[in-house]
Structures are given as structure tokens and as C-alpha cells.
Length: 217
Ligand SMILES: Nc1nc2c(ncn2[C@@H]2O[C@H](COP(=O)(O)OP(=O)(O)OP(=O)(O)O)[C@@H](O)[C@H]2O)c(=O)[nH]1
Ligand SMILES: [Mg+2]
Image 1 (spheres, rainbow, N blue to C red):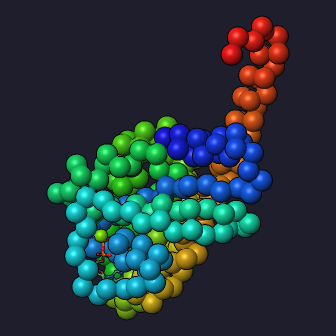
Image 2 (cartoon, rainbow, N blue to C red):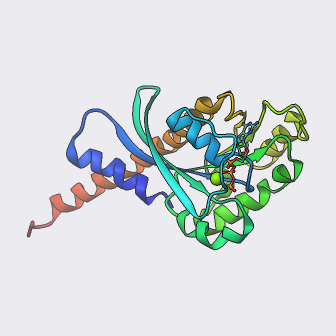
């Protein structure tokens, strides 16, 4: 499931580039209407539409950013949260480097559904160890006064389900939106460092092997 990332990292080594640049795929999941498209639009275009249509299938947008000195192209995949679009979104989970589990703070059912979203993602993205995968939890619509979910309950769920980071966001007034995406990048790059190490080890092994065998190509 992390093949895309491995290839990017390997490509850099072959090309001998000095600065690190990676394409990271991050996917937004959560119930219909929680604000996934609004979060993506706020982050990428700095726009907000109070009468957005439900997404059908998936859409993606790219955003370039720098986090802790790493240049990254973030490919943000926005999915349709409504149940009737399930078969249109699940084929796009594979290859995701990070998953943003999104709910709305004024809708407790959307919070209770996070476990189902995590399960659906892990199944279709073929994630072997869901608790080790970089999920980030977003509680959106912080600006709405009719709050139904307490931060304490979410933090407890995050602690008990793999220690995922949690952000309370508002796509409407831009609160915490950039911080949440940047944390997603940070978590992914932290895993990539380990992946780079594995690739490096493989490369050394291959070179050793070829040194002891007659070269034919
Ligand atoms: N007040 C407020 N409204 C928001 C916020 N984010 C989204 N909305 C509104 O909530 C509604 C649903 O937002 P969307 O971004 O379309 O939700 P979605 O998760 O993409 O929904 P699906 O595409 O059906 O999965 C829209 O009318 C948005 O304007 C927010 O932070 N605050
Ligand atoms: Mg949408």
C-alpha cells in the first residue's frame, strides 16, 4: 500500500537528487456533509462555499508545500461520504500514504462512524497494521455553536485506537486546516525515513551480490 512512496524515494536515489521531493497521497474520508470537500478547498484554494454539493465518487487536487525543510507535493483525494457512493470511492484507497478521518463536531453520529471509516479504508487499501498507519483525525465545523462531540471523547478514542493525532478545524474560518494537513505530511515523512533506510539496505545488498558475480549486463 506504500508502493507509490517507495518508488518516489527510490527514484530520488537513482536520479541522485540532493534535495528531497516526494509525492504524497493523502485521502479524506468521513460521512457525507462533514466538510471534506470544504477542507480541501480551503487548504488548496483558500475558498469556502456555504452551499457545496455532495461529492460523487472522488476528486483530487495537488498542493506543494514545505514541512521541516522537506519539499512535498501533496495529492489530496476527496471522496464521497454518502453510503450510496461506496463502490465509487473504495477503488481509490490503494496507494494512500496517509488518511484523514473526518467527522463534524455538530454531528455525534459522524464521530461514532470513524471506526467504520478506518475499517473500510484498511480493508480496501490493504493496510496490514491499521494502528501503525498514519491516520489523522479531524473534527470539523468548530465554528458551529451546536456542538455534540467533546474533545475529551475524541482524544480518548484516538488514544485507544492507535494514538492518532486530533485536530479541531473549521473550513469556514480556516482554523487549524493547514496545521492538520502539515501534521499528516509530518507523520508520513516520519514513516518514509524508515522506508528510505530499508531501500538503502536493499541497495547495499544488491551491490554486494553483483560484486561477487560475473557481470552480464
Ligand atoms: N459552518 C461550517 N460549515 C461547513 C464547514 N465545512 C463545511 N461546511 C458546510 O457543510 C456542508 C457540507 O460540506 P462538504 O464539504 O460538501 O461536505 P463533504 O464531507 O464533502 O460531503 P460529501 O461530499 O457528501 O461526502 C456545506 O454546506 C459546507 O458549506 C465548517 O467548517 N463550518
Ligand atoms: Mg464532498
